[in-house]
Amino acid sequence: MLPCWCMKIAVIGTGAVGGYFGGRLAQAGEDVVFVARGATLRALRENGLRVDSINGDFLIRDAHATDDPSKIGKVDYVIVGVKTWQVAEAAEAIRPLIGPNTCVLPLQNGVEAADQLASTLGAEHVLGGLCQLVAFVVEPGHIRHAAFDPLIAFGELDNRKSERVEKLRQAFERVAVRAQIPDDIHVAIWAKFLFIAPYSGVGSVTRAPIGPVRSLPETRDMLIKAMHEILALAHARGVALPEEAVTKSLANIDSLPAEATGSMQRDVLAGRPSELEAQNGAVVRLGHELGIATPVNEFIYNSLLPQEMQARSMASSG
Image 1 (tube, helix red, strand yellow):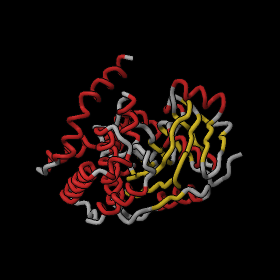
Image 2 (cartoon, rainbow, N blue to C red):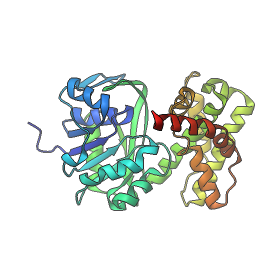
Image 3 (tube, rainbow, N blue to C red):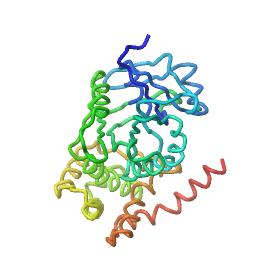
Image 4 (cartoon, rainbow, N blue to C red):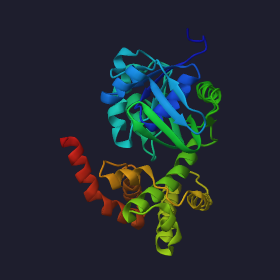
């Protein structure tokens, strides 16, 4: 029997992000439904959700999973854990879950997911969000959290304090997940973007882990210039991202294991569709819209685009 305080939560996309954070909420006693397909759906139904974590392994043995969101009913929260290029499709799938007070939390890399969801579902239902998590899918229904203490951050798009945001933070707190409500969620999202897009992009175009990338003056300079381009975009968009965001991002890059690679980089190296459009591609698009030059990000994007188009073509034909 579920506790009387439990919330009904749908997780769209049970990969590393959705599986880990959705799994932690289920561990906290929340009524969590995982929306999945194919082998992942079968694994969840037959074996539950298994998470191996440096913060403690756990198994959600009777994981509630479906491939049809319309059978779930209205929910309190929707956690969107799909890849960036799947957000528009996910927004349509989320429609049957939306009640008067439902809020939707996107956890994608990039800066466009909340706007995409809001255009379909209404801004009143959408939070801004981000996460920091080093995890991967071992096999369908099996997630491995491999390093660092996960962080999830979220807030209202107008930065007001709200009961629904605080209630979600407390749910994560019950299973010792670091959950933060930033003073300005847009600054937090852009701060992560300033880190992840150069890190992923330079790593992808050089085909090298972060150790040599940050050590060579030539590629370190690419990282710094790409970060400054994103800082200029943030300011042009009215986001009060501080100048020291570049210094902080470089410090984060310098603290990574030498062999570290970004998730976008791993997809590129494996020939899979990647988040190129949502990361360096977004920098280029926004730069064109705002009249701001982004030559380093443009070089990265243009260099990777032929392979990205090929990977997407192969994925769609397969």
